[in-house]
Image (cartoon, rainbow, N blue to C red; front, side, top):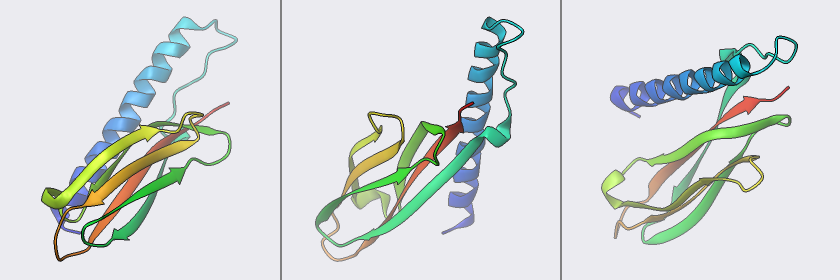
Length: 123
């Protein structure tokens, strides 16, 4: 993985954490003083998984959030973007993680697909 890709991912993770903090801050402002939850960056955890996808094939990948947390963002990336087709990328229906459906359209080379989710600890 090159330095630009790592920096891009770190920037994306930081952005997601900031958005989560703002959302929690807004929710906290609407709650009574007794119900207020202080937004904390340590309440957001990034979970990831990677898988090799063979040439001209498709697969589904998923990551699960830790118990007591819910997915607030997620996505996928690959080692060969021009040949990667993401057919689906979404939070699980119960909020427990993130899933993606991808295909490798390269006629010769395998690709590595990375799926990730930002999970917000509840309570």
